[in-house]
Image (cartoon, rainbow, N blue to C red; front, side, top):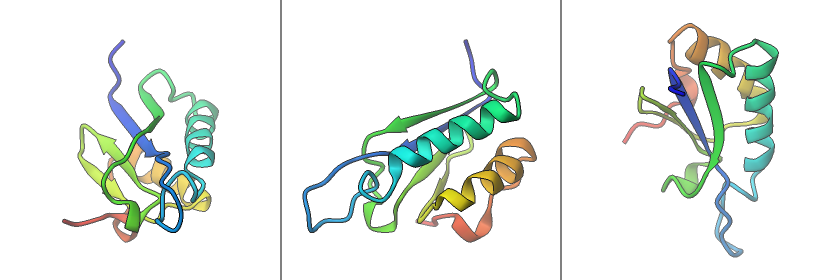
Length: 101
């Protein structure tokens, strides 16, 4: 099965005092993305899943959308619907959350 878009949500755990996406609600974000996609009937074309470290822990919780290569940082549960509607459905990345390297 080939997905049109793939959303990877960091759930990496690091020992304290280092910040890690897993400690900052990474798993809750995975479930929120999965539910948002399911609610919209998008789970056939778009997959959301947990990922290991995306190397942006200090800016996390981190999310990356492929094949677009768009990285998001400091993603909150309240941002999930906006990312789904704006980026995943309408192909307009959420600029305020985008990480630039």
